[in-house]
Image 1 (tube, helix red, strand yellow):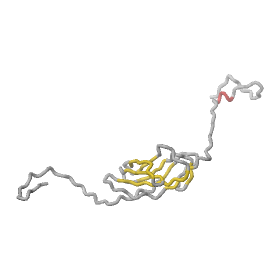
Image 2 (image 1 turned 60 degrees about the vertical axis):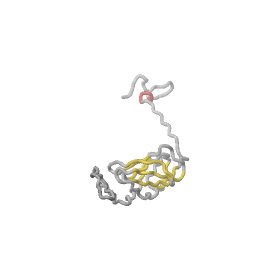
Image 3 (image 1 turned 135 degrees about the vertical axis):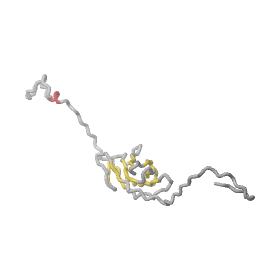
Image 4 (image 1 turned 90 degrees about the horizontal axis):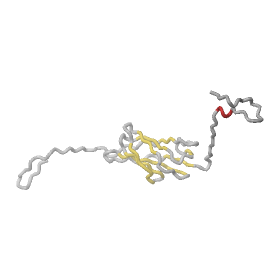
Length: 160
């Protein structure tokens, strides 16, 4: 850059400036969020019912983009996509029981933001959760002879 005054005197040239013109006015909409949950009643399609109060949402956007996740219009978190454009988000705290409507917006490194994705509907229903109690008994303990039983098991013998 050279600056000139009204008399025509010019400055020495400045160091070069690098200017990058971003002609992308809008980033494409991120692909619709897909979801995977790991609960006893997993929701895998929009509108499903699950008892997972911390569902993992997954989707795609431009590689390196910041993805903001919303539930009913309230931001609940953000992640950065990997080099392949994939992202995953699991809420830090449990979501309330009831209906949820998730949307995402991606913003690239130049600050171009996508439109909100189509909503991903999910119902969290924890009223039918059941507790599963499992006991493990070593195999050799099952073969212990007890007074009055007729199994013929030898308490000194262990199964291998």
